[in-house]
Image (cartoon, rainbow, N blue to C red):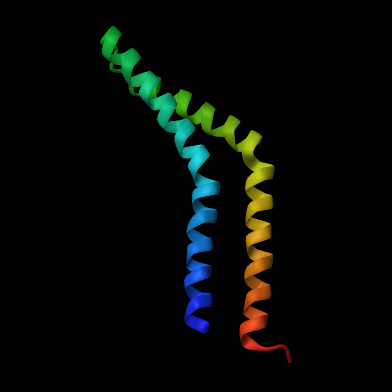
Length: 91
């Protein structure tokens, strides 16, 4: 019984990490692809050209997705604590 709860907790942890990190990583990946294509077309190999747009997109994505990320993590944490109390027993 407890093994099933542990497996469910791990599965939920992986899903939450995908929900929280996935959109941010996809945004950075998209910008990196566009910048790489631009650098290949223009033959400009400036490292700041690749870094600064990624930094700006990361900041903008965190501002836009921050409330969703916090709410997802808060909901997961509350569920995890409830599950720990259920498995361990209340005092």
